[in-house]
Each structure stands twice: as structure tokens, then as C-alpha cells.
Picture 1 (cartoon, rainbow, N blue to C red):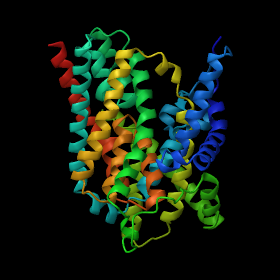
Picture 2 (picture 1 turned 90 degrees about the vertical axis):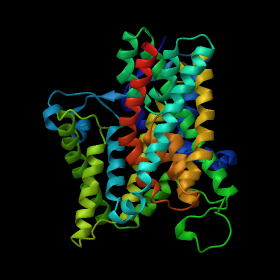
Picture 3 (picture 1 turned 180 degrees about the vertical axis):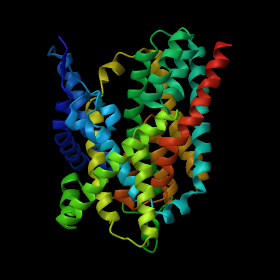
Length: 430
């Protein structure tokens, strides 16, 4: 008999999952060599354990992911909405907090250096999304399946992720594909897993093959350090404490204020009829505040503290997201769906390594962007950021990549992908 556990279990398991992932990264060199993010390692290990327990006859465990506790949802919800006690993902404060850190560290100097790459990367991401749909529809027809299955296993769930899958589910159902929501959820889950598994290995291979180095260490001879190990969450926390308790408290309070203001900003944007991710308001508010303060000569914000806080928040968010995945949905997936999805993995791997890397400059930053492109081309910008953090913490910083990927992955690609999906839908129905 299935047992559904409260979302608070996920919150309690977040740190143990992270520590498990770090232990696996230290214990098994293959994970370290291929730059698999530690939240992914720990989360997948827990998911596999649940599948094994289910297979041997024990109760099938699953986790609810949303809560309506007022004290937990207040920070990420404007009062106009909060009074109705809406359910929110238990991980949402960590997600929005992390993207607030991205905004706070997006200084104008870095944005200006990466600005010309934003439209180019958007074009590449859009081309890949179109290829995903063409590949999916083509394979579905070749196997004698409904071509809408190929579209669902294309850019709807891979570049689009769970949100786009749910957004188009009703349209696809009306077009005659009754199981659109179920297939969409399974395909998007597949994307989350494989987007996290392939990004680090491909970027690491490019860095070693081309002997690339981060700009900050370009004066050093030899290739990037292949044995360096990213700091764990406990080490990051200790380093954070080294900046002083008053500085940490100041930045935490600033983050909380920006998250709340960002919640109102996102709500206002939605009321205006625009569709934006929930975290975009806080990211933009953080970006405006940081650059406004820099222009005014106020240098109180410490990028190192913000970076450490962002790493902790992202780790907790991903640990919750990966631990809540339902791998049974993938195990029960139809063969045609899995054939299309594995073909998508091959497409993304080849496109990012051969096209994205070359056109984005063939340098270290381009290799890091490849890891990010793998992450959001299979469904989620946070996974893209986690891929890039895993690579950059090992080989060196890549500031432009951390500007370009969130702007395209979190904002712009949804616009072009919606147009892309709509064209394919109308073509298939016509």
C-alpha cells in the first residue's frame, strides 16, 4: 500500500541527502571525475533506495512537495495572496533565495562583459529546442506512435520542464492525447535526472581536451586542476562563518527583505498578464539594488558572502528536488517514450559539445556554459546552475556563464520555446 509522506520530511532530509552525496563524491572517484553535483548523487541514491524497498514488497514511499503553513510561505508570498493560505513548494524559499544571490552578484561589469553573448546563446538554445521537437516528432512517427508523444518528449518537457509540461497538458489533451499530464511529468523527471548527469562530464571533457583555464588563473601554466575537489556544505558553512557573524546576519536579513520585495514584484508582473518564473522578481530586485549601491559608492555587500549563501541555498533546494523525484514513473515508462528521451540526451550532448562550445568562444567560460546548457535543455535552470557550480568550484570561476545562463534559461527561452511548441502543435493538428 503506498505511503505518502509530508513535505516536511523532505525538508528534514535535505541536509542528510547533501552529506550522503558528498560522501559518495569522496568515496567513488568516478562521480568526482565527471563533476556530478553532490545533491544529485544523494537525491538519486535516496530515490533508488525507495524503488528497491518497493521492489522487495515494502510500502511504496512518496513525498508530498507542497505545504500551506503560513509561517513558511509568508516570505515568498505577497500578502494579497498569502491570506488565502496558498500551497507552495516546500523548497521555494531556497530556490528564490538562491536566485536573489545571483541577482546580488550580477554587477554591471560582469553583465556588460557577457551582454553580447546573451542573444547568441538564446539563438543556440532556441535552435536546440526546435531540433528537440523535430527529433521527437520524427521518431514518434517512425515508431508508429502519436506524433504528439514526440512533442511532449521534445522541448515541452526537456527545454520547458515540469512547468511547461503542465501548462500545455490541457491543450494536448484537447488535441487528443489524454495522458499528456502523466507522460509529461515522467518525461520532465527524466530530463531533470539526465540534465544533471551529463552536464559536468561533458564540460570536464572539454576542459581537459582543450587544456582550458579560468581567466583568474590564466597566468598559471598547465591545464586546469583535475584533482581539485569542490568544498562540501559543511566547509562552505565554516568559511562563511569566517567572514564574521555580523556580516552573515546582515546579508541574511538583506536576502529576506529582497525575497519579500521580489514576491510582490513577481505578483505585480503576473497581474500585468506576463508569465515569469516565481524567482525572477527577487533576482531583478537584487540586481537593481546591487548595481544601484555600487554606483552610489556603497560597498557593504560582500560578493563572497553572497556566493557562499547562494551555494548553501542551491544545495538545499536541489537536495529536496532530487529526493522527491518519483523514479517509478520512469521505470514504468513506455518503450517509445524512453527511446525518444534517450535520443534527446544524445542530441543535447552532441549539440552542446560541438555547437554551443564552439560558437560561445571555445574557451573555459564556453565549457562551463555547456554544462549549464545541458542542465536547462533537459528541464530546469537550477540544475543548470548546479552543473556550472560543480564545474567552476573545481576548475575556477566563470562569471559570464553565471549571467548568461540564468537570463536565457529562466526568462528568454520560455518565450521562444512557447512559439516553437505552438508552431509544431498547429502543424501537427493541421
